[in-house]
Structure formats: C-alpha cells, structure tokens
Length: 284
Ligand code: PLP
Figure 1 (spheres, protein in one colour):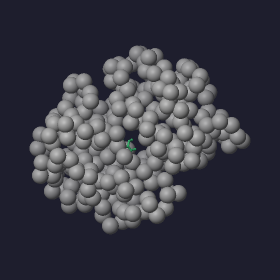
Figure 2 (cartoon, helix red, strand yellow):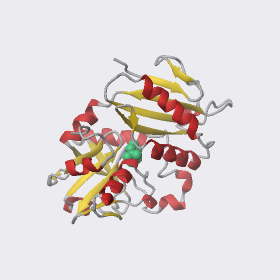
Figure 3 (tube, helix red, strand yellow):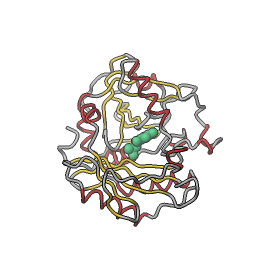
Figure 4 (cartoon, helix red, strand yellow):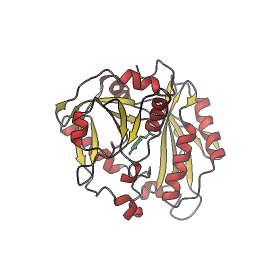
C-alpha cells in the first residue's frame, strides 16, 4: 500500500524519498510559505476549487507570486491518480518562497493516509479546552503583517497549543481572543447549533475561512436550515445545542466536553455530515 505520493509543481511524480527541498528553502528556514490540506475521497478532491482559491488568498497575504490554478490542478491530479492507499487520502498543497539564495517558489503536492487519531475522533468526538491567543478581536485589520487568517507554514504555535491541551487531558483547542471572543481551533473552524441555527465566528476576527464550514453552511441553507456568521463567547458554546470542530479531514467532529464540562449530544452530527458533499458512508 502506498504511504506517501508526491508530485512537484510543474514536474510530475517523484519518489516519496527523493530529496526535494533545498536546505535553504525559506519554507523551512522561516516557515515562509502557505499550504492547504484537502480531503480526497474515491479519487475526488473535495472542495478543491475552494482550497485553490484559499491558497491564492494566503499567497497574496504573504505577497508570494499568485499560484497558477491550472498547474496546481495538474499537480494535485497527478497525486490523486497515483494513490492506491484506500478510499480516503489527505492531499497537501505546499508553496514556499523558495531558496534563500534566490530562485523560484517551491511547490508540491503530497498525498498521505489520514491520521488514525482524527478518524477515531470523527466518531468519538473530542474534549476541548479554550486557550487564549492573547489577541484583541480586531487585530487582523490593524496589523496585516501578523498574517492572521492566512494558512501559513508557521503552525508551530498551533501544534504547541494541541500539546498543551493534551497535558490538560483534552484532545483539541478552541482559541479565544483577549476578551473571550471565540476564534477557531488550531486546525479547525468552530460551528455551533443554537436555537435551530448553525453559527460560526466571522472571518474579520483574523481566523481562517474554512472550506468545510462554507460547504456545511451551503448544504444547510439548501436544506432550509438557517445559518448565521456571528461573534460567539465561551458561555455561548456551553449553552449551545451542539459544538463541532470542522475541517477538511476531520469533517464535523463533535465536541463532547468543553473546559471539563460535558456538552449535550443532541444527535445532530449525522445530520450535519449529510450536508457535506461526500459519499454517505464517509465519516460514519
Ligand atoms: N482554521 C484553521 C486554523 C485551520 O488550520 C483549518 C484547517 O486546517 C481550518 C480552520 C479548517 O479549514 P478547512 O475546513 O478548509 O479544512
């Protein structure tokens, strides 16, 4: 079974062990680059165009050259076609500023199996702790150089937050602003059900616009389920009819415990999964 499949942008398939990155690549030296994580199911890259659009958005925020959509489609399809590792695959698109000594940006697509942990969490749900990001809610507009809301390769603090959550006996995190406003997870969007409406925090808070949340809300609206983008607080989460962490690979993972307090299971998760553009068996 294939473990990793890699294609270089503009160059085609390469062996999974082939040396690809120069040691002075700014993606490595500075975390200076952007990426996307896409779920592939049965050879279909879910919401691929939304991921490409977000890659372009992140690249623009970092003032990287605009990614050429046609080349990225070919690169991603090369990986998808070469995959024989099961129905689902995680497809990463990575674009860095390239070598420090000069040269073009580095771009590649990599396919890999899904994390067994995330697969289990889709079904079992997660215990979450809220952790502060320490930022004021309107910082993104005031300080664009902080790249809040860009999907950059500098995810070390997000990973550190997850390790901190584990030390506290939880599996995931909801970041809050300095005033307690709910932001997002380290690798997920927060969605809640309140009084028959699906709600998520606004992008203006400097959070990543989620492709899964967008697809979910599109599906909800088509099914006559109202949606709202609004600021939320931790008490709002505690009082909600359901809280989920949404992302391409984890789909809609229910939060069963928040800061040590049990949240009710109102049985909505299968209904939310049905709203996503996926084969019915995925995520169950
Ligand atoms: N927010 C952050 C910070 C993320 O890293 C991610 C995905 O990894 C998301 C939200 C969810 O985005 P998507 O649904 O497009 O996977």
